[in-house]
Structure formats: C-alpha cells, structure tokens
Amino acid sequence: MATPTPEELDRQLDEFIDKLVEDKDHLPAGELDDAFWKDLERHPFFLKEMPDDGAELHPAMEALQALKWDDDDDTPLDKANKYKEEGNKYYEYKKYRNAIIAYTEGIKQRCSDPTINAILFCNRATANFYLDKANKYKEEGNKYYEYKKYRNAIIAYTEGIKQRCSDPTINAILFCNRATANFYLGNYRSALRDCVLSRKCKSDHLKAFIKGAEACMKLEKYKDVQIWCSTGLTKEKERNERKQQGRERKQKSEHTKVLNAIRQRNIHLEEDPTIDIFNISTNPAGSCVQLNESDQTLTFPVVFLYPEYAQTDYIKEFHENTKLIDQLSVMFESRAPWDEEGKYTLNQIGVSFIE
Image (cartoon, rainbow, N blue to C red):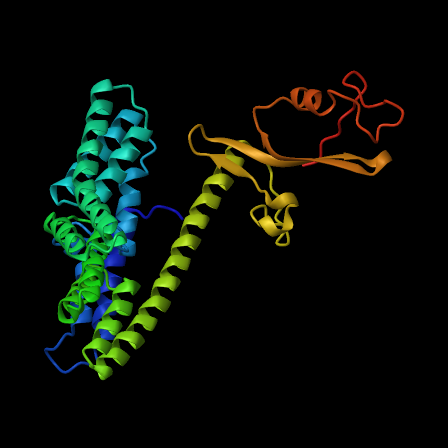
C-alpha cells in the first residue's frame, strides 16, 4: 500500500469527521453517544495519550507512522535516531512493550554510531526490566497456585498488579489469576470483582468470562451467569475475527516485501491469475519464495527435471547467491541410482533454465 501524502491525510481527516457526523444524524439534537467520542479520540489528530501496547491503531495513525518511517533519503543513522526518539516517547508514557519494539527496530538499522547503538540496547534493557517485574510476580503466583498455596498466590498476583504494568494483557492475567485463587478459597465475591477488573484491562480475556460465570453460579446469580456466558461468546468471536484480520495484514505485508524484492532484481512475473507464488498448497512440499529479513536475500523453490529418465529433484530453499555449479556438485557427488549410463557428471551436464 502506497504511503499517503500530507495532502491526502488532510483530505482523509475531513472525510473522517464528515462521516462521523453523518452516522450520528439519527441522534437527538445536541447528543453524541460514547461511540462517537471513542472513535474520534482514536484519530491521531485528537489523541490525548499514546495508544496502549498492542491496541488496534486507527488507519490514519498507521498512515502517519508509515509516512514517518518511509523516507528513502534517511540514512541508517537517521532511522535509528528516529526509532530511539519513538521508543523514548512510549517509555515516557510507560508503554514499555511498544518502547521495546521501537528500540528493536532502531537496533535493526545497524547504524555506524556506537553511541546510538549503546543507547538503544540500554533503553531496551530498561523497558524490559519494568515490563518483566509484573511478569515475575505472575510466574511466582503461578508457582504457588500449582502447589495449591492459594493465599501465597494471591499475595504474589497482588504485588504484580501493584507494578501498574503498561501491558493490559499481563494485568488482565494477574486479575484473572487472582480471581481463580480467590475462587478456590471460597471468596466468590472477590473472585467476581477481579474478573470485572480483568475485563477492564482486556475486554476479550476469555478466562475472565469463564471464571466470572462460575463465581456467579456459586453466588446463585443465575441471570448474571447467562450475561457473562453470552457476552464471552460474543467477545470470543470478535477476538477470533481480529486475529484473522491481523494474520491477513501481516501476510499481505510480507508478500508485498517479497514482490518488491523480486521486482528490484528485474525478475519478470507472469500476470496469470491462476498462478500464485505464495499459495503453499499448490507448490511442491509446501514451499514458496522467501525473503530473509536480516540480509534482504531471497530463496526460491527450484525443481530439476531429467526428462529422459522421467525423474526430478526438488530444492526447497535455493539461495539466490548460490552458484548452480555448487548446487550440482552436491547433487551429483555420487552417481544417481536412475543414471544407468553414468551420463550425469559435472563435466557433461547441460542445463536449460525456464523462468
């Protein structure tokens, strides 16, 4: 997807606001529902704070991020500096997971300035430290829980909650795990309360719905049991759909990178709708063209045909920098069992290449 220009972003902002207003025409005069304000506040021009770690970004925010980083004139040092500043901003707002991602991207630039690289590694270590404190208490609580020491588990989970970690998933797990420990101690009201808090941290944390329904059963709140179950099923469906959409976006991004790398090498691809170089099910041994992110090199699935003997050899990952003679020397180091006349030796083989 092409990166939008600043002018296009301005136009998209106008269209975004117009659409919000049109969608709310059915509301009584002067009234705007919570969904209106929530949608508006997700737009980057109205953000009051950095997005939560792992939160789904508004399309305009994704476009702005692409605009920020997709500058072909930037040197690795420029990009590393930008990622450092991005990570520092996330760190300032205690969004440690996002900070770690930004610092890691900066490290990947492999810039020539050792000071910048040292800062990136140090800052990432600091963000990991604060992110890991809550995790350590969670693991400690899990160990106590495993041995049915529920009171000790509750203490550990509570200490983890006190860290006020920026990761909503970790917080949701801490509350839900504490709810489970309380449940087995017979503290059903405390368990239910923690399930509610777990959902506030992460609205689709399914274990919280399950334990919340069980707590309501013990408290004989049967109508609430139905609500917890039906809402949980809805959230599960929504979560699965989001996961699928995320997988599709990631796959599309990876495919785009591979296609760009292929075109940069002036390799011509047939415009045949029946041919899909990424469709693993139609390729031998389930392989396809791959891009190595670390050095930006390609590997291809390659088939060697020996028509006179109706035989084939399949190379799942043929590196683009591997010479054909080197590959053949490995394949024909010893005589093939089907080569009855001994014709296939390195000094006799002729190769015809078909794109």
